[in-house]
Length: 375
Image (cartoon, rainbow, N blue to C red; front, side):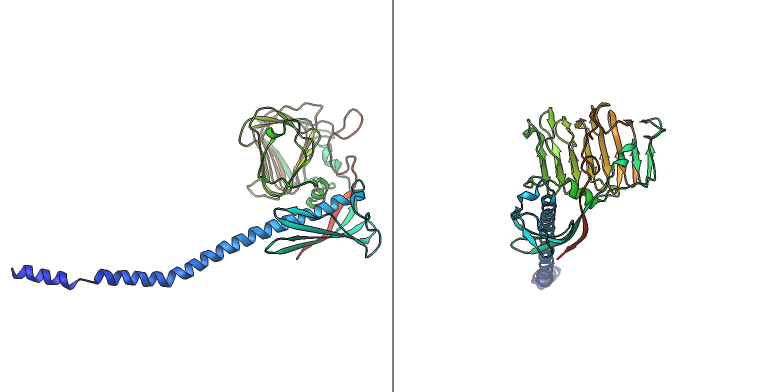
């Protein structure tokens, strides 16, 4: 009985210990939770700020590209008052609204064939301005198209799996190419599409059965189809972010129709700025250009009368096509051909005109960026 009384007393003497432990944890939580919540809040604010600033920068950059578009003689008459022609003279270009941001652009005359562009993007939270000086340049880069493979670095042809024609002679592959090579800013200005930005990150070509119009996408883009048919480009496509074509969805055929797909993304390393997959079959002549790496794995139904130009401006062109490729493969750091047949074809049609649009191919001048700054 004495032992039972002792145990009972000991149990009664432990009353309140759980409460003490709970209070200790509550105290620790009270001390650590506010700083943790503040840290999480700061991270969310920083992420939102970074996203907003990136979108504002894209919008301001679009204003610069719009001004360059207006400098083309075919478009200059659209400027109220015409192009400024004297030092100190400037014009305010038509405003734009991009992703809820108001973009205003001013074009000022500096010297003959030299202009200053100030593009300002204003949102409810911030203002970002890009000031750039552009000058008219006269460059011809068509020598790149005289080889079946052209690389400023090296090229690799996977033995036994890939074939290249010709392998000798004037149009044979060339490594360490030291001829004129276009810069990303030059080509970006050359291919820019002045139209209302495409809002979605997915472009379903099935929605354009009579022809895909020119597209300006400020951000990433996934080009897919939901019906197996032939879809024809009726204008150029210009994308500022990493791009996928025919990687998912239904099989479809894309007729380049002499137009260009330009990807203004410099993604490099082991990643790709542009990836074209086996859901897409390419036909017709056209240009496929990215500032960064290109992974080229489509089906091909082209023939010797077509000319396809694939160019990585600053990176690698990795080729694994399914079918016969006719045209030129070009890459700044490397061209790697793993399998498939690559044959050089002429970029000229029967009348002596170029089949594609590239600096020097009938449009021998464009506006190049001399200086560029952000404030």
